Amino acid sequence: MTRIAVLVSGGGTNLQALIDAQKNEELGGGQLALVISSVQGAFALERAEKAGIETITIARKKFDTFEDFDAAIFAALSEHNIDLVVLAGFLSILGNKTLQAYGNKIINVHPALIPSFCGKGFYGLRVHKAVLEYGVKVTGATVHFVNEVVDGGKIILQKAINVLPGDTPETLQQRVMREGEWVLLPKAVSMFCKGEIQ
Image (cartoon, rainbow, N blue to C red; front, side, top):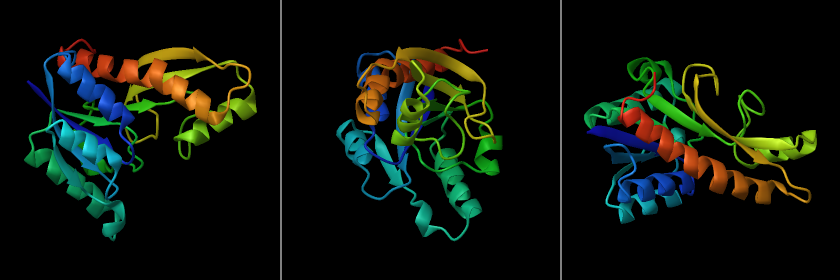
């Protein structure tokens, strides 16, 4: 059984996709064991509690240094014997301690086709605004391993999604989530748990 921690900062729609996949036995033997939020009162915590998953809040602003914050995340993951860490709308960057301990065991979902529209500062609606401003006709979602370079780890899965005439950042975000992120993330987690990712 692969014990999974999901790290969140907001509403938790990707977490919900994982909860639904677990309910349908589509996580390849993985178990959602812990949800960590970097924001007090994030709605994702309610989703987790409703699904019977243990939750912890490790608020970034409560720590004097980034290293202390990372150490607290690492301690929580160790204490819960976590095998796979999933970043699902987690708006903090992980530090060296966690990255080294969980090399190739941390995955992230990004709302664009990496290497486009990614890196520092590209998250949430900002990504979709940039896509529309640039005028590209195709965007999408990517699930990738996490390393010390923001959005720089090896790609696991990608899905292309058309940009439609009249799209706003909000409509595009909804379509990328529904057709891309919510499909790819559970699939990548399942592949990891089954040992299908080389």
